[in-house]
Image 1 (spheres, rainbow, N blue to C red):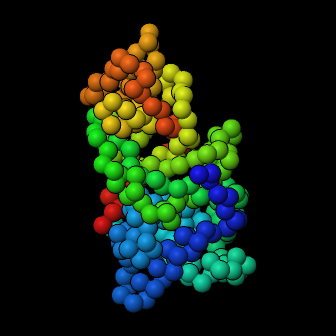
Image 2 (tube, rainbow, N blue to C red):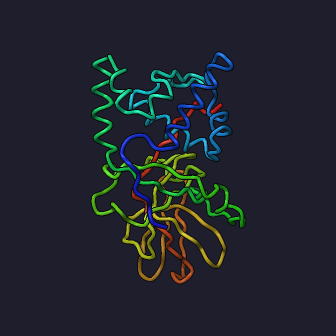
Image 3 (cartoon, rainbow, N blue to C red):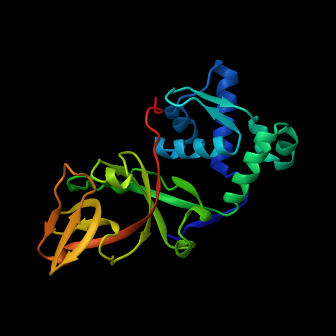
Length: 252
């Protein structure tokens, strides 16, 4: 599935999250938690909601108190998301206008990337048949093309939620989302998603082909590499091109 190009400005998901924040605050007198936003927007992953909230904060629509589960303050009403002109007129603060302008340029071209499931960053484990159906067909993340390597724009992309801590020295943590480019081959040292066909197991590791053997190297000094004698049993499914960070302590 190719990543789909989004229009300029706020995505439908961003607008929907702003509506939820506005309506929830008016109804209950306090902001929703991350999980409550998930439920009201039909987004399966708290990591995806955090990603959108980070974008909305950078664009000046909300403020967040780090480490507080309900620490979200709506700065611009949700209704302003429908009219960029109205939003600009309402932004009386020079700081907000400057921030909105710089972020607006950075996300001038947005792509929707499907979140297709989870990938294990740890010891390979058998993958239940449901693992790659954890997220519905509408589970997407919006990614700015300017954040991707120049040679990856318009590539065949998909996203996976990371489970485990074997890649922490590569700044990939449990709960993060990795943006993958579909690939069947890899160069030594590239971070890839691997399917071990003989074991029916999946894992995220650095790939090395050495003297007819495969070494799957974790980025965690407490874990040992995995050695595969028969390279034919190793199926490369994709290469990591971007990591979306999960901010710890914000999931309620």
